[in-house]
Image (cartoon, helix red, strand yellow):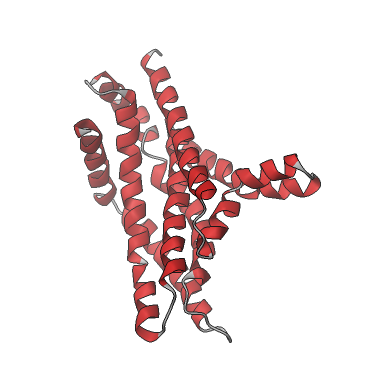
Length: 237
């Protein structure tokens, strides 16, 4: 555990030692703030954060590649990844350390939007349940996206390629339920199940379903496992 936290701490310092974390967080807040303000200024405003949750989920799909593209690709390009892999750490510790660092940045980004909920409680009487479930869903969705990005970064030494590959995978997952429209029965259910928006929707409406939690946790675990295998393969190249 100590090795994982050490690697995570190093990566977090790297994030905040460059403008990247600040720029990505600022962009995320500006876009989310716009949609939150728009939802409150509508003809029939609701005392809920739902107005920005769906746009925030889509924005995360765009920003996630920027958070993860350098985690392995940069070290592979600079030649420092080989040094890291020859250190007395296991592959899964390296992967989890880097993943947790990006997850920490995601948590900060989402936490800063908490003032939306504070505004609602000051000027209205919102239901806390949908707000909390919405934030939980956004965090789980982001964690799944980050795992995909960490994997993409581990298979290339080019950050741009890693970012494009991440976005391509996430976009494919995002729209895969559309393919279900040409099928019926079990194939349609499979395509729907594989699409993140299908599982995020319930969280946004205040429903925490075990199958949705399992989906996001499984998504993150699967791609982290793929990443461990990818990193292990580098040891023998």
